[in-house]
Length: 99
Image 1 (cartoon, rainbow, N blue to C red):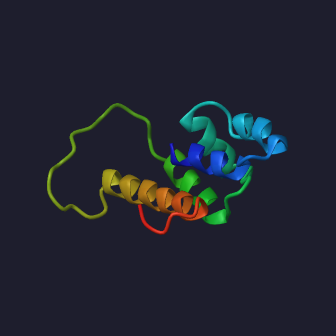
Image 2: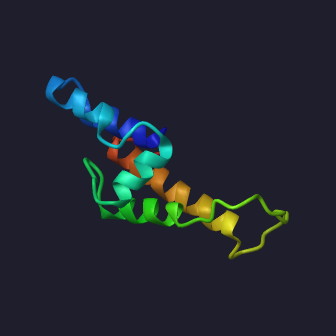
């Protein structure tokens, strides 16, 4: 949803951007991640592309047991941290100082 917010903010009231913003990165979350990772940055930068690439690199295999606690280095923790970094980049782009 944060990626959608970036496109909405980028398009603003400009009718010339509104059409491209609706289809720029595809329709689904994964389409958005792939497009940004592949360099279709639109209003975003290379930091966002790296975060999208990292999220796409996660194995979509069957769910494994997730241990509770503070186990650093866990794939789940790394994925959450990467998603949070992407969310922050999107929020900054939209002019939000804090989430």
